[in-house]
Image 1 (cartoon, rainbow, N blue to C red):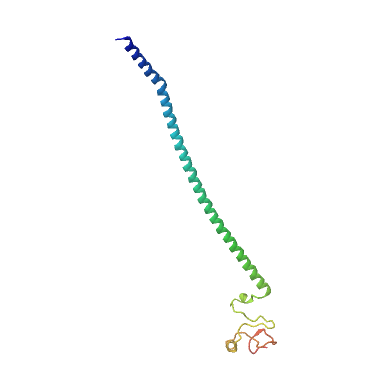
Image 2 (image 1 turned 135 degrees about the vertical axis):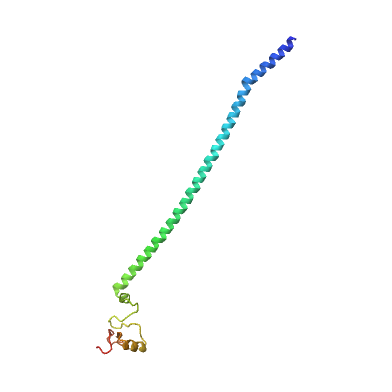
Length: 153
């Protein structure tokens, strides 16, 4: 063998060893970095997904809370309206304008004050009421308008 051939073999062997010693660790490092990048990207995607799911869940929860708040607001408005209704009824009773409700029959009746009537202006109804023994108010204005039975004065 010639010395030139031996030198060429040694140079190639040194290059291969240098390649193994320097290039292969770099390639491993690059591969490891790429793997870490992929892992980091997957973690990012999982984090994004989790945060979006949490945001959607909280948005649904907030929407439900707003709906419950609207319902509560409407119920409060209803309660206020009922309170106003009862206050108005109290004022009517206080003024004596709702006595027909207290009598229980719902029909307005004479209350014994000047000019008050029971809403039965038809003379035929008055005669029928008198025949059945019900109270009949006095007819005409200026007379005593209190309720009494026919024959009692």
